[in-house]
Image (cartoon, rainbow, N blue to C red; front, side, top):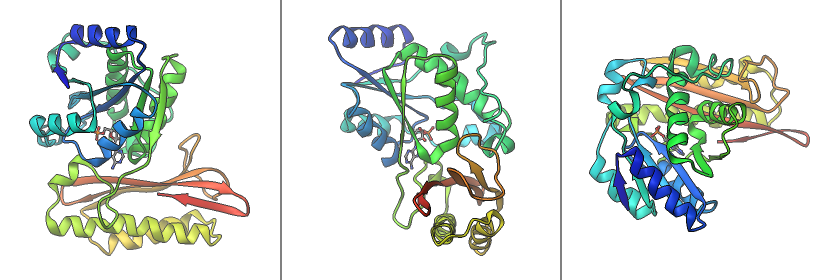
Length: 289
Ligand code: AMP
């Protein structure tokens, strides 16, 4: 695996791979890799011959300075994991090269207003800006994003469509720890007790799944079942529990279309998110965690 922080070098290496007839797959990350990240590489391999990964903790998507500073980092461990997953090229850009004298930002309107966008102002603007830059540097054919961050994946899909990036976006299932906690680099910050209590998010989603699949369409009741489960585990704070339209991310009052049930809650100082897709099917809805 070649590792470089040089934009020029990335361009040359990718260009050469393309000249050899290879399709380029790209997985952007902020590092501190876990099985969720590596699963994206596995999916990328099914669609592309040459795998590029980036690790860049993108300051402009953090609305909290301390959250940025405390974000876990371990490049040596990441490089070993990425190499064993089959990454060919690792891009570790320098913040100065990315943002010196930077004045241009990318914003996907409307979709960025809801859920995490409501409680983390500027977050998706930072995400869209860095992903646009990374896309323009790497020029991949395909890029894979995790469904754990479903709002992010939908916003990137919309950005790629609206700005005519010639890139196929693939969304990959959420990889979970034993007990159901969605894997996240931030889980490192959880104490043993917080981690145990955080399992309430997954339990709440499972209870909502049973309710929905047994025919309940009442958004208030569906959200209440999750709230009860999480509150019993004494979170620091529940940021949101929302049932939103899959297409607009607008909150819905009655479940009658493809939807997302999304949760964000703090255990200790760690903000965790999770979600479930709700698909209309013959005679009702099925839920996918
Ligand atoms: P991050 O490093 O947290 O910015 O995440 C980089 C990519 O990995 C994003 O597309 C995330 O959605 C994805 N990802 C993070 N956690 C998981 C997970 N548990 N399962 C699947 N994908 C994930």
